[in-house]
Every structure is written in C-alpha cells, then in structure tokens.
Image (cartoon, rainbow, N blue to C red; front, side, top):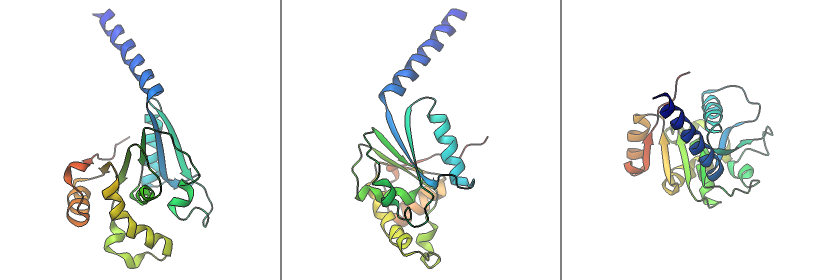
Length: 174
C-alpha cells in the first residue's frame, strides 16, 4: 500500500513537470506593478503564485506610468507572446483581441458596471475601451465569470454571450 502511494506521487510529479515544460501560459494582469492590494490584484497574485508551481507561466503587468500605460493596447503591444494560452485577469484587457492573435484567449469577467453607468467614466480612453469590451468578449475563446449573476445577467442577458462559452469560478478563500 505504501509503495503504491509513493509511485502515484512520483507519477503526479512527472506529469506536473511535463505540463510545466509543455504548456506555455501568458498571464496578463490588470493591476500595475507595485500597486496597492485590491481584490483584483489579490486574485492575480494568488492565481499566479499557485499556477506557477505547476505550469510555465509568464506574468505581464502594467507599468506605473499614468499616461503611458493608460490604454490596455499600449502595454500589450510591447510583448511578443508565443504561448499556448493567454489569460487576461480582467475584462478591461479583452479588447486586445482586436490587435493581436492568440492561440487561445481566456478572460475573467468581474463585472460590467461601467456599461450600466457610462457617465461615471471620465477618461476618454477608458470610455472607448468600455465600448469595445462587449464585442471583444464575443471574440475570446472562453470567459471565466466570478459569479452566476455575472454570467446570467451581465454576460448572457445584457451582452448576449452564449452560455456554453462561460464558466463560473468563484473566488477562493485563504
């Protein structure tokens, strides 16, 4: 019995190593480098830390310049990605699908509140970005919604995304 458990553990370790060597993932983060801890930043940090133990993952975060990094496309163009999978940790990154072609593109949607209250967005580049987001979400390969409400109301009813394209994954608890 003990020997069998040891063998399984070795097999799992080999499988993880193979996965880490084979699968290349790019993790695009909404948060800026050295930004204060917010809900999305915590999500990005924890996800990256856990995934990096098992897969070959490259993390890309925005710089700290207020103007230079304002539009999502401006900082995504700097990186050449030769990856199997790109995960955008926020819906605000989704418009990059208009500018770059990826093998697989997954985006996490936290909410789409600015679509309901556009008057709250003062920055013109962010207004343009939020006008592109609904159409960009139709172009991505898969969407992770943080709740059933986001999936059923925001994505399916309001934006018209097919249900089978969306997976609900609730935030974890430490």
